Length: 452
Image (cartoon, rainbow, N blue to C red; front, side, top):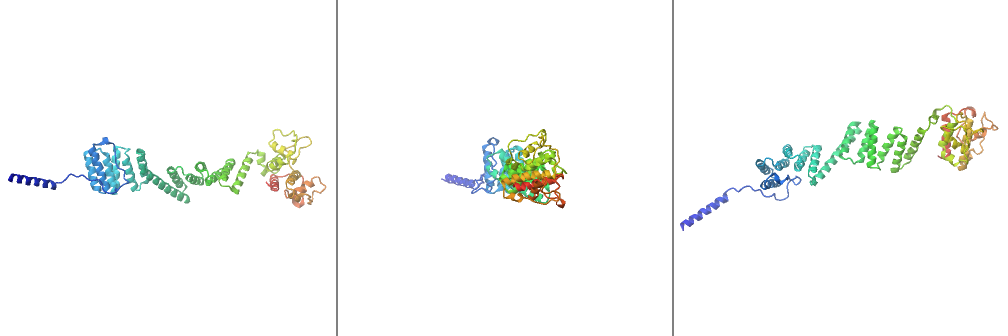
């Protein structure tokens, strides 16, 4: 009995001693919500370590998520002491440092993990967080993008990348606009290029960059970028207007007309429509032979030049007033103005001579111009009879041309209609050569009466 009692006491003592002895550390899973849910768990291939080590690693992560960074550090460090090449725990130390807001230590640990595996997505993601905390936004963005490239399943990072890109674009745009307002055009250009690199589909960035380049005198680049803006957004009226203005400044009238036409299609307006007409007229003028382009400075003009003026400026009126068969003229072969000579003679505004020549090189006198003006007025009167009352029975007084003069009726109609004016001393001077500016002024007044 005594022996049994002694054995029972010894057994009880052993149980009590065992109860008082230290148990091995085995951290439970972190209760409640994780403290750092946005951290990327540093997983890895199972071949890196034994299942027991991986279990220790998961336990260390759970401790970190509970908020106990010191205990997590001890656990991760213990693992690395056992398995020095186990880079997931190195990344774990980086996240633990991040949790303590020790960015420098975090970067050191993430970089060490990346030395072991340069495409290790959890370390790249963590490095991005550390760089972002340090204010190095561009480097953080690169790290996040590298993490997504390494592991496309890291979808939460995609929204971070989008936000960072948006912020970067906004900052670059703001800086670029401030630089442009301050006249620092090269700084503005760099800012817009940086914004475009981050947001290459934003049409307005190309347009604003083009405006800066145009202002700095780099029109080729401005045209390229304004064109890209218009391609991305065909309804960008300001980009189209800039393209038109650049072409107009370069005197490329045809392209300017095309650009203004595109602008008018998007944002119709009378000024833009007028610009289209003006650009087309300038393009047509530049395409004309030198004989026509020099009329505005000519001290005298030829019959060919007068025919070209009438044929071009009053083309519609002459076409509607055209007679039947064309007049046969023997001296027009190869003449630069032959299409317009044919037009004015068929409309009866100018005539061939009795020997079937037009004599295009002959000088135009004021009497000749008055005759052509009078015949144009007849065509206008046929379409606007009420307007024609102004010159139906004209009787102006000229000191050098009597009413019985053969040239008087035409001169009287030209003056009464306001197309031509008397000269000094109420003279008309039928034989005085007509200057280019005088002929152009008469054409403008005829156009006004014709309602062009």
